[in-house]
Length: 184
Image 1 (tube, one colour):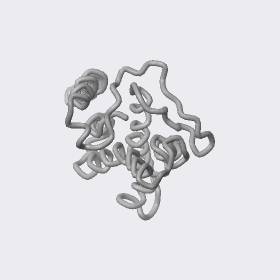
Image 2 (cartoon, one colour; image 1 turned 120 degrees about the horizontal axis):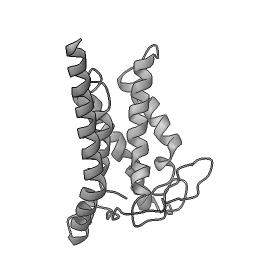
Image 3 (spheres, one colour; image 1 turned 135 degrees about the horizontal axis):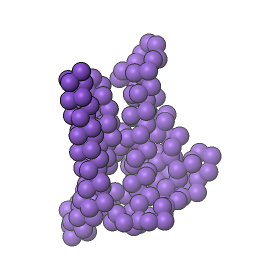
């Protein structure tokens, strides 16, 4: 898995592309939680659930279906209890993307058994052909080690740089758009 830091930064970057009127501390914080939440499945180890099972690590909670269902649930719980409009759909999309980004980043890591993207329809675990991100150890104690330092270095390159460039591109685009509107 990528680390919680890498997943959180991905959610923050996804949020950068959203309109200022939607983006606030609550919005981004919930998005970050959504991006980290799929790893709650590591508790399955304590219950003797095998890694490769439906409820195992990188199983259903890392799937596209789970991401979409969580996006709907979070939006209904925190934003839209009544009618569903374009704003509600933007919220669902954001929270779903944040959640789905978790599995996408994990599929770029150097370890584990792959990600069940298509669960519950197909529980096959998949990786991307290119896997540059060092897999993070499970557990905070294991993270604060030489292995954890290698993970942070790897994520700085393969998550930090691309998402920082994306954020800068979004900010530049917004500034140019605002300048263009100011001239009118």
